Length: 463
Image 1 (cartoon, rainbow, N blue to C red):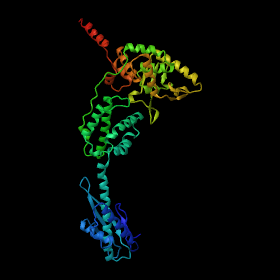
Image 2: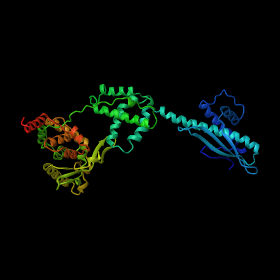
Image 3: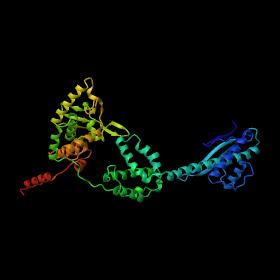
Image 4: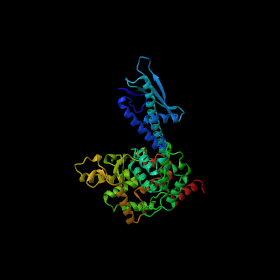
């Protein structure tokens, strides 16, 4: 087909006698685009055809593409157009090129004149497209509001990317609900370190949870971390020039003693367990004697229990979020997959629970059934949140300290260490990657233990 043969990706234009009207329409469209972008004004007179005016306009702008005639006498002529659009970030020219073949019935003189007109149309089109792409690229750095960036970029690519647990996604979602009203309509590039510091100060001094309580220091740190993730990703993608988080001090989180039962309260706890339903008694005894996390306990299947060797194998954990419901997944970390020894009394309780389940579900393949399943559904774990609610009622009725299932994990660590267990063994039981975590957060020393330590020291040196 006679016409333009494109070399580097522009839109082909056809220039034949039969399609001259199409050329004028194309030129009119380009002039309209130039008008919309402010490069052409109505004050400029257009007495000739759109293509002739465009040729004149490009000449005034001094952006005419180079036109090279190719071919020899007796052979069909063609014209090669090339235009420089600008330079890239490394200083190299950005250029476009194309080849145009005039119609066979066009004389050389007319072909040369027509080539100038076609080149002008093509050049203007390339310039307009290049400027539009450039504006779009630069506009992305300033056009995103905080809300748009979070919804359209950060959450899809950094949160819901398949690498996070449902509980982590739920935490991010809940924090963004609080954060969003403060930054929603602000341009991402315009948010300052002062504004972020003001937000963190508001969280600390004025914000109250749905229960009317101030936000914990650790929770404020979570807000800081998420803001760091958001602006860090925006900076990485060159969407902001400066990261405001670099001017914001991280909130301090004071280390506090973990909540754990004392030895006296632990004895009362074991006594009160006898009054509970057998199923729930097994859960609480397993938690306080093994240091399991709540989700790890609910995730146990009968194939994980070795009665002969009195051990359990932690292979999975159960979580619940309103969005995802009950989810069974691998444990929190790689070191959380572990083998834990059982004390004899806990082993006996689990044996009795196993016999009870066999009677409940006589035709069930017990290996993959959950120890603590939904009522009537042996292959479905129960909601772990229900365990927390029921335990709160239990400790309140028994007059025990207000501890949660996770506090029984702390209690287990403290009781093991006060009974003479070494740090490494406790670390392995709890599934910590680092022994310092065990020492710093899961060990509670009371005055009695400190007095025993000083008395041993005094005895060693006859003091």
